[in-house]
Image 1 (cartoon, rainbow, N blue to C red):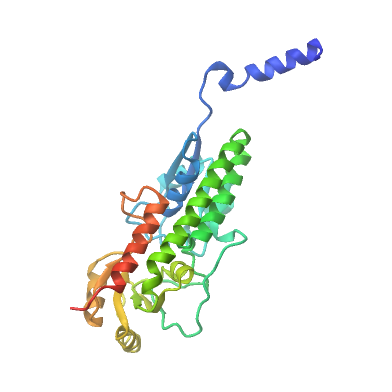
Image 2 (image 1 turned 90 degrees about the vertical axis):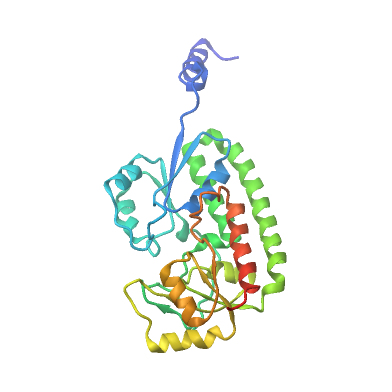
Amino acid sequence: MLNPLWRLLVLVISLSSPIAWGYPPEKLTVLCSIRPLTLLTSDLVAGLPVEVKTLLPNNADPHNWAMRVSDRQALAAADLVVWLGADFENFLAKPLRDRKAAKLEFGALPGLHWPQEPEHSGHNHGDHQHTGRDMHLWLNPANAIEFQKALAAEIAKKRPEWRAQLQQRLQQQTAQLNNLRNDIQQRLAPHLKQGFIAHHDAYGHFVEAFGLRQLAAVNQSAEQRLSAKTLHQLQFHARNARCLMAEKNGAQEQRLAKVLGLPIVVADGLALDPKLTTFTRFLNEITAAFEACTSATSD
């Protein structure tokens, strides 16, 4: 039996809870740097009072974005900020270094799977310098699982009362992502020998996860012309390629495809299409693009 003083203390604590007064639990705001992280976050927190926002607009280049006043305001207002890391989003490095509130860096998580960089890959990184690690981590379902594990733990720190529900959602998501990985493996199994050229070297994690055959990649900015040597290398690889895989079907992509004599297939690696409302749907669309590539024929 509690003595009267302890009874009074328990009553005060219970009455201080918003739920005791009929108020909904306080909403949590999670700000994700890019949309694939938004999809993974939204899938995990479904059913919880969490508002998930995306920092970068669809027309933004994560490698070279300049922070706006509204971006800084969104960072300051968020309870948790999720990003890839400075190698991918250098514009966020200083603001997040100065941020004292919660943040989660995907690229710094332990247990991630990284594709091996071949010594002579034929890649021309013309638009920006890579540090040796492909930061398009979300394209490997195993990495997506690691991200959601870390995210669930981070949210539970802020809302301990959600821990059980978060663990249940995490188990569901892990099972779903494992099933998705198995399904993709079966879908792509007949296509593993067919090669492709990537307009932007953005698919390494997907290629490594499912054993695909990327012959070459070129990262060319709009202001640059391909060197004769690079163009010769690409034309050599194009003999054994079925398509030019690109993140969009723009004028620059079309020019290169014409030179190489390859059809363009678009794989929306940043999930810019608003119809992609879940991570499963997003990866299924990426898979469909690779299926289309391997069955493509040159004009």
